[in-house]
Amino acid sequence: MNQRPLVIKFGGTSVGYGAAFLRAAKIAAGAAKDRPVAVVVSAMSGTTDALLDFAASATRTTGGEPPRTSSTGATREGSLAGLHRTLARRHLRAAREAVPEEFLADVEERLHGILGRLIQTAGAPANDHVARKDAVVSFGERLSAEILAGSISGFGAPAAVIAADPIATDASFGEAEVLVDETRSRAGEYVRPLLEAGRVAVAPGYVGRGPGGVVTTLGRGGSDLSATVLGRALGSSEVWILSDVDGVLDADPDLIPSAALIPNLSYREAGQFASLGAKVLHPRTMEPASAARMEVRVGSTFNPDSPGTLISGHEGGPGVRSVALRRNLAMTHVTRDEAEYAFCILGSDADGLKVLADGATTAAVVGVGTPTDEDLLLGLRCLHNAGIRTLWAGNTCAGLVFAVDEAEAEAALRAVYTGLIPVETAAAMEEVA
Ligand code: ADP
Ligand code: ASP
Ligand code: MG
Image (cartoon, rainbow, N blue to C red; front, side, top):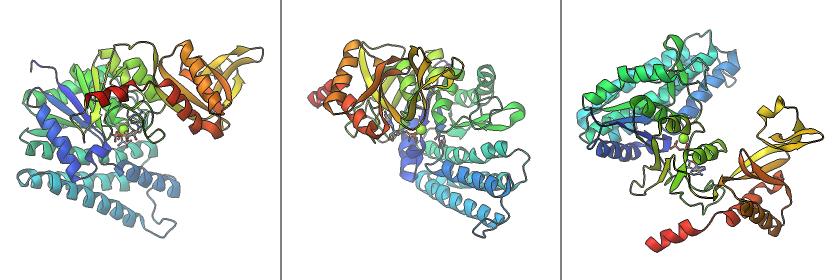
């Protein structure tokens, strides 16, 4: 294998139903014509929530044991059967829609095997309920990985799910820390042989293996992180993160419907924006990418011709590239030790360190990029023109912060967005069109 493997990650909405699996599979098979490809896949959208709800209800009702009877009178066997039925119906249907006849029986058999192991794991008595929760929730990704592998094979690129989870972690269940060297050796053992045999290697995202082989997870949305972790372990130079949006947009599209695609971002900017809640990327995705200097392309499974956002080590010029909103804060004074838990430090005065920390009264609109003094003044003017009082404004390690009253959070976001984000991107695109 003399070419560096490409890692492609498909999120939950990219595999939310049969036809979506087909689109994802076609992209992976197309890429595999030119170079070795490893695929990281999330659970079908909604599956992780269903598994977490099941695990939580078991812990709530019985302190950990799966409930013998729930508050509604359902038995433990009844709710396990319900979970099995729901997941079987959904995954078998997607498999029938996405996997051709030739590979279907094999995929169905594997899905039944995984569902059987899930029910065994979810129904068995457990000493460590936190550990069991991770084991239960990992099955969402295991199921979707089998369907996607069958579907990719159907496009003429032989694919297989890796025999063992490649990402090694510590034992921090629910938010495990990746162990870099151990992951490299597991990837060498379980992923590389498939790639060398000319296969597309499909790995369940989000899932890791802790000490003694115990199943762990990387935190909600963690498949993005799985992709860059695997890329680093395989010596990749490129990772694609494919979702249901065209790339990283310059604001959350739910809050700013006119948010536009950002063509290029630096690792620093993407990491900072993700930490502020840009959901398209797990906050830690950029750590392995930046350490190994891998380019990350964020794009859409549903619009593969869109160029997406290219994230690299290249820093753009001065200016604000994106705007985020952080809610539920309070402006307060803390000691030096407490400051490490604050959202950001605003400065120090006679009362100690002034910070924005968890609370209920204040929101922060945050500009990410390389903000200048003009950006600060412009933002202040926009807020003033919108009739919004700024409680504090300035450059912090979280970005260019405008603190406002919580009740004015969204209006403040719109005002700062309109003032600080240049309309060039949209205008340039219209020109090209
Ligand atoms: P996936 O299932 O592919 O991992 P996610 O739901 O985790 O996808 O992330 C994609 C979603 O993130 C988008 O549908 C969009 O609503 C939301 N989102 C929030 N902020 C941004 C942003 N700045 N750019 C792009 N998407 C964003
Ligand atoms: N399936 C997991 C979640 O819903 C991981 C992911 O989608 O990235 O959080
Ligand atoms: Mg996600």
